[in-house]
Length: 329
Image (tube, rainbow, N blue to C red):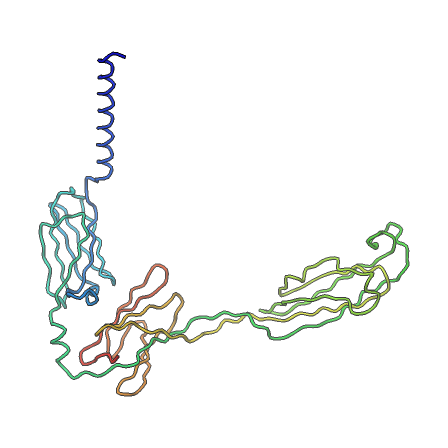
């Protein structure tokens, strides 16, 4: 291979590598931004006090594109820019809420996560001193959920007689004994447990007669169920079989359950599993134990609550004390 050939091949390889790098860079770096994403929180130096701000009005302007929306219960906002903008396009973001000072910032990068922290109109310390506080103590959450169980409610025992005559040659006319020598009889039995009931732990046994000359020919009872069946082959004289089982019933009942919320200063959080019903708050006020139903409107006389429903059915409740109340821990 000549020196010129080696140079040509090297040049081709260099061009190919450069084109590959350009393609990878282009793939990793989208040319436009379509969505402005962020969260609105309460401004505080303590991260545990940075609560999500729901129903805040958010607007974004980037060049000729704009979008508006509101935050959800977790403080999240996702604004679709129409049309999309270049990655290097600066963004102006405005956030407003009736209980917080407005936020207005320019020169933001459009494709970043925007965390907006709003200052409350009234400081928490000032609000706490406005009226005497009533202590809320021993707080727990009460709710009901469906509990399913299968319980034994009775037992069943019944005898079945299977008639036959011993020592009668089969003559090739079934049913016959297992060795084909003697005439046999094939008898069946069945039992029904009743609506919403089922048999469990079924036992079938020969009780009287020449039991050694019989056998269970068909088993539709071992697995249990609402109806059980079986058949017995008898190639001797009449025998008596005993069928025994437990009768179980499937029941669904409401079971009361309790959960304990996480309390931090003036805030209370708790979650309920999918299927939880009738949530209420049990608490002591002035030494008296009281049950406060939440209801669909989430109304409490001493707190303001919000519900964050998750896709998996879990429900997160966020409650903040009203003026004049304080948690006693």
